[in-house]
Length: 158
Image (cartoon, rainbow, N blue to C red; front, side, top):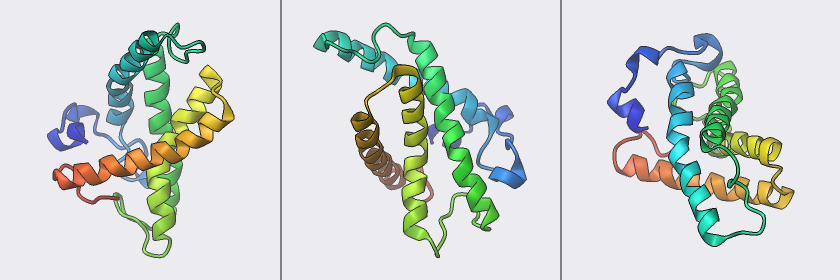
């Protein structure tokens, strides 16, 4: 959201496909998200080394490659939701009044699901971690959206 708010790399702020996904899904996201994901991967690898886990997920994998996979999965996973919203006539950045709860949950869960699918395919995480993280990740996503809204970085909390 900071990238959007400060208009970093505005040259790449071109819609992927205006009619299908709207104006908010741009090529800039596909450039920024893998880069923005890298510090988190690096921290996770460092924590795993510190904890000396018997079955680490991240240690031994390239942090740059994982960041590329997760950042790309994050962006790809948001596209079906945007596509569905455009087909239903819901404007960019808005939720449907008719299916409000469903779209609030979907808006928070879509990117987490995308990242978890990447984790499952690349790191073969256990199914209990997969499903637990969808719930926990959706909650964290919602928390940060509300926080960014409170800091006036987001236009709406959902």
